Image 1: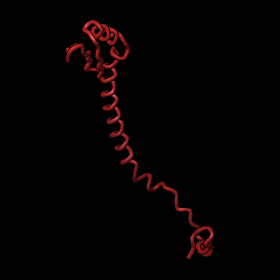
Image 2: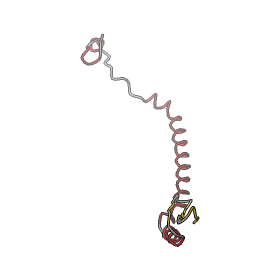
Image 3: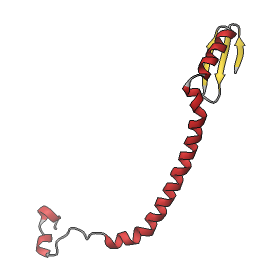
Image 4: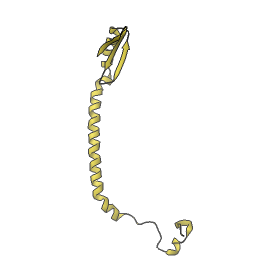
Length: 102
């Protein structure tokens, strides 16, 4: 979109890409607009936005699935957890150098 904001100030604005450029006359603003619309940034912006929304929804679904599976296996993980690394012999537990003792 090209609009005149004041004397010798024409503005080209591409709202999907958030690009704004000022020119001294309408012809230069038109040229900038044609140049911008021919770039890959302008051509891929709608696709990138759509893919971003799709990726966010896919990530949310994956997180929900992982949380569901993790909550289902939480009791099993508690049962299969390794015992604490504390010796059975009370005399070894009293050794302050390794186990903290008293």
